[in-house]
Length: 451
Image (tube, rainbow, N blue to C red; front, side, top):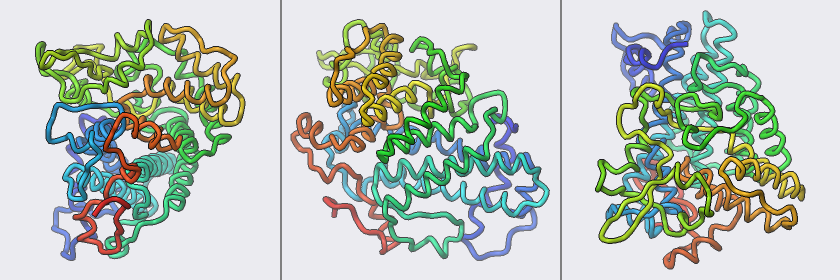
């Protein structure tokens, strides 16, 4: 596998190619033709690695999750310019929303380019072609999943030909979800259970299956969600669970997929951790979330920090410990998927299927690892579902906007947020379609509640 530290030296060869269909000029004499890129294993690898790198960027891998946390009931902010997210008062010309939308579509474009390039390649070994196709399908599905859950109906782009896509209307969510499901199932069939390299930074079969479990849960396909989560849990390489303070380390056992970082620190760590002792975090927890930790839960000690600001005590996310280059052995990679979520997915799916006993067994695995007693086997279905929701909130806070997506999935977003947010309106459950994109493409309609 092409190492992440080295692939950047090849990416300059791809810059012209990625914009090839956006301009009508002859390629310069030193440009590498797109059909040649994917006949070369190293360059084809670099094209796929570039999508992962983009996924870890500021707008997709960091700020959108922070926005999700603020628009939900997870994060507050001391940044006065970001109060609009906490107050669910986002305008259609919001710059961060625009950039997040654009970044996901850039990555989808790159995934489409890989799929087209690999399909046309003639010298690429078959197994390598399958791997690259599987990864591109996984990454495209991943991007669409977050577009759907932040904006609802979105344009469905499956080609690099901008003449076909520049004026694409929004497709119904069900249609886009069909593509996401198809992409993930195909990816799972193409990818090997072995990682393409020595680290967990490129999708394998189990990453595709885990993502399929996540999407199945979100779309209320309970049986499929339980089945796919079980496949990953039974893979035998991500369990038993480890202490919470080691979960986010590079290539940790529970990690199903992470994104490589150059010096062992992540953007979430840089964002949440105060610059130095005595300083503050711009994005502390809401009081409601910190109150959700039960006495004795070791996750509070290991995954949160605190500071005092203007005489008040605040807590902030500390899942990632590094704000700068890490010491050897304590490097952290950005987590995409981990095995603990599979327990929560299966628990919720089983509870919805009225298998409360099985659901509680899965939740209690996480509670035991957190130093908490197991939940009572006498819980009824509705009580069990609320207990799973609470456990998920504590286990997966600030991870890819999970709380925001969960409130949408359970149809409890109005019930929960209208209690803690006096300004809450149900139309805020989706973000505005960026006005700049609508100016460029008149076929893009706006979500309700926005001008």
